[in-house]
Length: 291
Ligand SMILES: Cc1cc2nc3c(=O)[nH]c(=O)nc-3n(C[C@H](O)[C@H](O)[C@H](O)COP(=O)(O)OP(=O)(O)OC[C@H]3O[C@@H](n4cnc5c(N)ncnc54)[C@H](O)[C@@H]3O)c2cc1C
Image 1: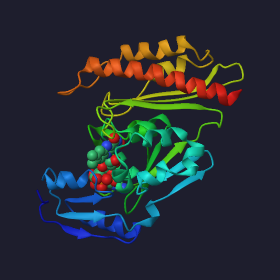
Image 2 (image 1 turned 180 degrees about the vertical axis):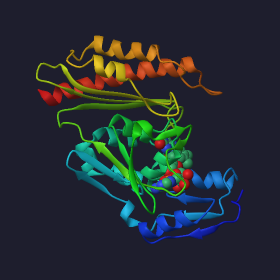
Image 3 (image 1 turned 30 degrees about the vertical axis):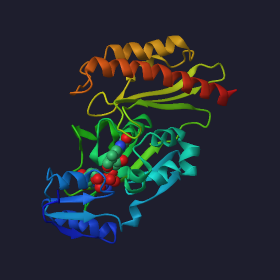
Image 4 (image 1 turned 90 degrees about the horizontal axis):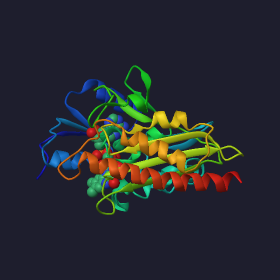
């Protein structure tokens, strides 16, 4: 199928793009087009205007800013996957991108496109939640920051007003000694995850947990952090008991989503299994790095 007719706009700067979103009705922004174009071709979406951000170079960047890593919204997924800065400051992102779709899609797909499309099974909101991301958005007249915990307004819908553009996100950089693991189960290589898990851990010299982040995707509309376990595991030894604490919290999670292919029980089972495996790997990496 072909998309319904629309007027195409190609702003050359962020200023121009923000003016367009302030003026136009029934528009859609196009970033990599990997999700938007199929939806337009199926006519699930019929915008009167398409605003192409591909010439807005200000939105494409990867930078270390103090204790944050900043990823611009138009940064290609391939650029993030292969970035030395990302590998050095947040290796969990590099690991997560090795599981995101296929090289051809990562060449065009953008970080911001994924955060705005907001598929519950996507690795990208998941690692953003694991790293306590803060999303920066702008309208013509104002800028604001949205913590990732408030970014999902509803299923596949970000907290973005009609006149706003996502600029990028600030992600916390963990100590160099931290351990990490991103794991998922998907039916075929390159598919979205049925369930994915992100684990970050930092240990002290006694191998006790100083800081830990435990995140799941494919469970609910937004990534789910195991906040109770994260709090109760502080100062405890990184061992089998710690893993048991996290899997028990997953066992007790209410309302795990389901669909025609994957029941809630199946997703819960996957979440527990993947969390166990990812915690083992993250603990091992942290132990090697601290010793
Ligand atoms: C076959 C296939 C397999 C895939 N597998 C995976 C996978 O395993 N994991 C995964 O995470 N993703 C996967 N994807 C998704 C892909 O990686 C892209 O992340 C996704 O399609 C959106 O990125 P995009 O840059 O193409 O955005 P687009 O398709 O251009 O836009 C997506 C949405 O975001 C909005 N938008 C984009 N940028 C902005 C902005 N700056 N401000 C405001 N709104 C904006 C658009 O208006 C649109 O609503 C897959 C895609 C395909 C086609």
